[in-house]
Length: 368
Image: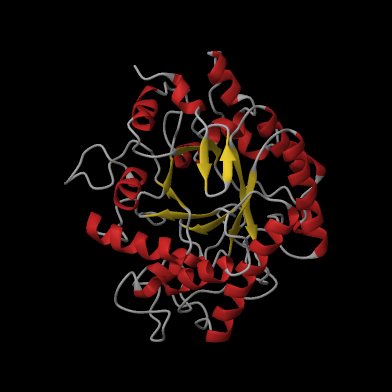
């Protein structure tokens, strides 16, 4: 049995020192009326910092583009009022000894499951005017649109460092805009942002990373969240082989990514079972690039987030398998979602060997 101590070893991410290996995963909360984080939002993050979470990655926050978000109460990461709200969040987390990074997002043409009929101030945007399920819904983004969105991500990153955040995460997974550019059935562009290969279709995020690196300090951590799967198809692969994955991730590292946050529904599932029945996506990323890899997916709980969203209760599960993989160095950091959503003191309870509560779907509606 692996020791729990491995979870509490310090780690250095670029210039940022982390006290342990636990990251709070980004989870949409939609508790910021008009896009402005409230005192309740600040308290929600502060409580996780008080209970020892090594790095908090916030819920998705929209960059400065009218259709960047798909729900009315998701937080903005632009504008004086919203940024003032985020400054209070940063200050409270730091006062509690924590570290925090915003997740920056543009949703592209992905409607909310919670409020699918909500209409943003401008039409949803996508690489080729297609919805995430491939229907023609509007016009492709112009090159000027693409340039403006790249600038919006860079401005958000610069504001994050100015406000005192400890790093940023770019949302490049789960069917959102950056992710939409990766897929050959959604990105049909015939300009420099399209192409027949994954690397060609990655130019959009490469330019975002380059733009961010030009406006933040060299030690400021930039995390990129990626997923192989897409909505309603967990078997999909952007990179069909480890070699293709290595080539792709290497391009993203060269562009400025300090870490990869590799999303999968259950962390223990192998990414390429035909080659290795153990290594998950984070394990492969670490093996192939040597760059900081964050694993995520049903850590400490039964089932996955989609079962919980469907109303199922998730039971607490042992961490032994996770700890063995962390001990072997398969990945560096562990992102925890629902367990920390349910209980701000989850990590401290784990450290003390105390009983951890099951996850009930009612927690999705709270800021406990």
